[in-house]
Image 1 (cartoon, rainbow, N blue to C red):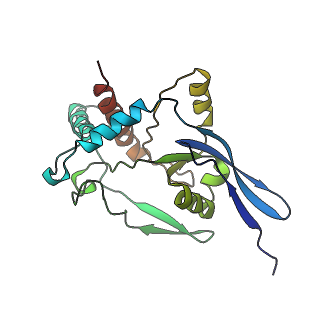
Image 2 (cartoon, helix red, strand yellow):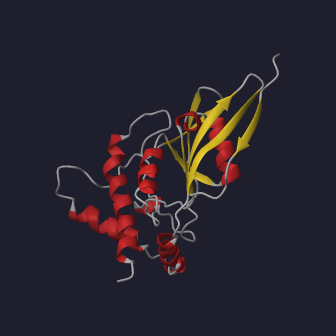
Image 3 (cartoon, rainbow, N blue to C red):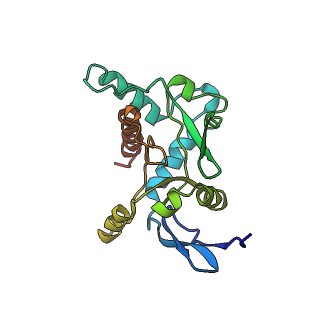
Amino acid sequence: HADKKKLYIIIDQNFIYSHFELQKTASQSAVVSHKTWMPASMDLYKIVNSIRKTYNSKLNKKYPWEDYLTQAVSTLSNEEIDWSKPKEDKLFFTVGARNVIEVAHPEDTTGGGFDRRGFGLPVVKFGKVGGGKSIALDDSLRHTISEQYGICCYDSDMDQVMESIEGNRKDSFIIIRSITDYVDGTTNKEWQPFASLSAASFAKAIICALPI
């Protein structure tokens, strides 16, 4: 049997978004963080943390973005597009090279026992975002990097958007990602309206909390 190549992960840990590249040689493989981004000002993140701290899970109340989402779905109920949360919600996990199995969603730990999915609300995760096709499509690497560096989601290519933000000298920015598609590229169009409305509701909560 041939010896397995060693994997070296070289990543700058101080980031909110990182574009990864996988570089291979004859003797080893290395995951290289091609570029990372971090806002010069964390004002928007401070606003989000302030909203989260004022939430009382014992009252089973909604976060502001959840109220905005509920209101938006109701307001758009007569539109041609169905903006409500679809009834079918499936999560898949890759085992080995090609085996794909359906698994249960992780337990909602954001509300002190209040199951948001059961009430038709999205579960918001806070953390770092990673990108790069070579990593996003490699299940083993993706899970390894996620566990070591606290990355909560991946996309294929958003580095050009980040370059534009940096090029326009925007010191304060925040990434809001609403996920519907599967890692193999399968598009879940049924979930896209609700997902986009969820992201917009979260953005509205931040905007409404900005100091006047």
